[in-house]
Length: 359
Image (tube, rainbow, N blue to C red; front, top):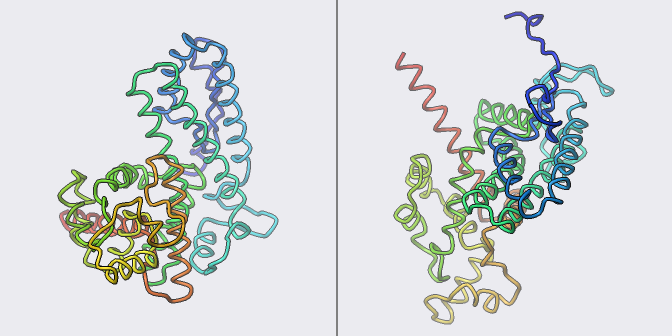
């Protein structure tokens, strides 16, 4: 198909509705404000809101229009997937990928990234807060628990999409990884910035969320802190990718240390310090509530199950890992999320090779 044939005419989405103008418009340039599933959940919620809090429907519709306007404004910036002659010169997807791979900077990257990427991060944060509010409203108006949980799941999946930007940037900067992987992650990052969704993260998010939910049962006591991988393997009915990840990667010291940070909610350094204290005092184990007193500092080891806690503790682990890598210190130089996404990429590549040979 020639480039001349690949053209799209703007279509007003209200043409597909029999009723009044929908508050949620599709942004033609690439950003879908609400996916098909998100829109279905939103419309289902409105049926309950109309019965219990009818005045709130207008407020919710106004919020959706605000999200649409924000997405439309971002979409007006030059596409990251096309060639453009911009103020700074010619920009192509390939040049962007090359820049991401070559630019090794441990500092804040805000001013190094395209405007569309930076603005899009604010947009997805706004969408996350919106859906978090929708799940709270769903519970308040007496909607079915299934709907409330579905809205919560969408909120968490969006949070993982936000987190994916950092994961991809970490992996792209890992010079120990094959160049073909780094280029693939860079392309995935461009697609995420352009469309504000990511297929890999959508499949990985439920797995990491399940591990997060199970962490309270898997790490009830702080003592030897051993047997984490065995507990995970026996206690969680996951998909095959996670099981293989545990089997193949938990023997790697860096991965097991990253897993401990994820499960115990404290840093590698704090884990080592706590081990020394307990060994010196001859104490076999303590519960979560006692961790802060033994370490002599405030510790939020018993974080909740919400997306804010998950993302907050992820950023702490991310920043600690980057600091260790920069200063060449002991401990994990990447997060559990980094290692898992890397493993998924390796498995996908292996599957592609096997499928090719099979032909």
